[in-house]
Length: 445
Image 1 (cartoon, one colour):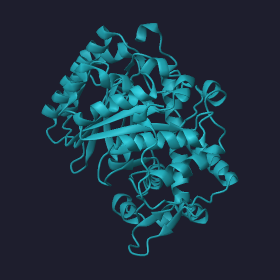
Image 2 (image 1 turned 90 degrees about the vertical axis):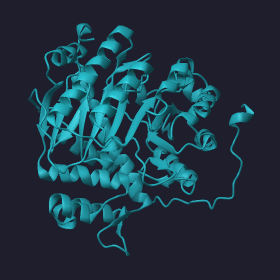
Image 3 (image 1 turned 60 degrees about the vertical axis):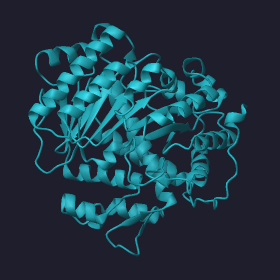
Image 4 (image 1 turned 90 degrees about the horizontal axis):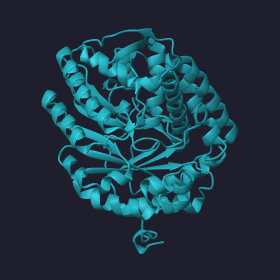
């Protein structure tokens, strides 16, 4: 291994010993419970619509923009994306900016913007133009977050994003060349050493660099995970995110039988992650770590109850209703050309379902608050979600804050269960995306 990415020097940091005591049978039971609720609440019994609601005065909103293009398609990724074609991508960015104007015309203002994909940086000049347009339309935007793969960091054009993007999240997955080869990323995005060098060179461009790692790969030993964590720490990014490998209906055959480690290894790997990063970083969620506790990160749904999505395949959550934009690029262009936004389906959720969703996010983020439920839903959390609260306390996932009775402390057991629940929720969302993409034909590109 190159000396650049040898193990980081051993600093004298008091070692953290995570206290995860949840037995495997309990984890398996929780997984089945989550699968039941995900299948129940993320079913596509939506109704057709062609318009977004107007904003409600006093509510905070976030803007999400989706860029559905990638130069290569990873086998374990189920996000909405197409193989990159420059002509299609340039047309798409133009339409995306028009849809932002439609959101402005409805009366929306946004405090934050998140750009996801696909690969958001397939055309840096178009992305820069789109961010500039968003900031002009919505001057209240204080932070722009964006995603990229390690290879794009080396492009000279990448420097166009300096001063426009506040937080750049880099999909590293692993610095281990064996894992990269197994996941078909070695030839696509370069070696662990190249990735390290590209991130180091790009650090000066953005106030916040986030390094995305994935655990749960087959053959990903404790030594490999430790090496990945040490290499990531040596980069000294503002944030590190450690996602568990997610298995969905459409990737079950390729991922579960070829790429995924046995489920039982997840707890030990997560314990190793907590022990290494706690102390160096503040835990922002079950799988996100940052230098401070008040900066935005990938799970924007934690900081914003409501968000509006623009672009093909994006989701919005407004007024207890999920809105889904068309997954067809052809239909997307047609709708925008006709002066209509891209939304085509909606599903309204009942109060209990929304509260269960926010409970999940509270567990995942470690920010479960009685005051939030009282102020937002006018309910007593302990009685409104009695079963959920009782089960989490029985499993040692929650305990009362002795200083502030309005707050709850999410223990290491709770972090483990929050990670598991969010993993199942995201897998369910990926299944929804797969169902929406299934009818697409060649002409929909």
